[in-house]
Image (spheres, rainbow over the protein chains, first blue to last red):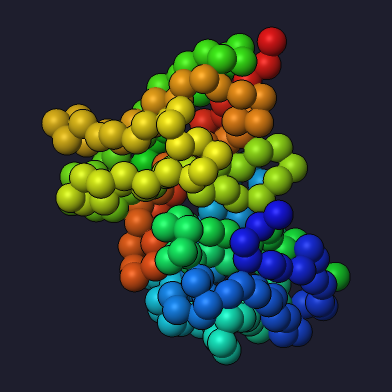
Length: 110
Length: 118
């Protein structure tokens, strides 16, 4: 049981927009920045978003995030087949003194 | 270019030990926050441990007391000593560099597989 809750799967058509939610509590999302990662099987996870919508070099602005209270949302616009992957949210949990991740969401581009 | 290369994984019996290494280039492990994250077969990402620039370390409840993270500044290498291994420790272990204000990880290695089985 993950500290952060994500939907197991989402799907959308190429070119469309999809959102992935991440729900937590005041000890994690409510008072800390959220990170988002893309993970393809057999590869290293890739950081997409961190610290309030900052994107590492090379990450397109098709990826964005938002936060409201104890929930965060990753948005992906202009979906491409190459976006099919697992997506994870993560943050610091001040009560646990631990880094916590969501259970992951599998994105299918139909 | 940043590269993190893990090694040391393999098959080990329950109760055994392994030491994972993460050789870094393009970053300096002594001047960066570093961590270990694992992924068990068919499961999601699970945080294992972090080491702060100043030296303090933190561990997930599931490994505290059994795993120890350390670094060798002269070799620019991060380590994870794993003792009293259990079947549930079977996973791909990734080392990663920490960044940002809430322990994001911006550079990751390719991972090394640890299998705990008799």
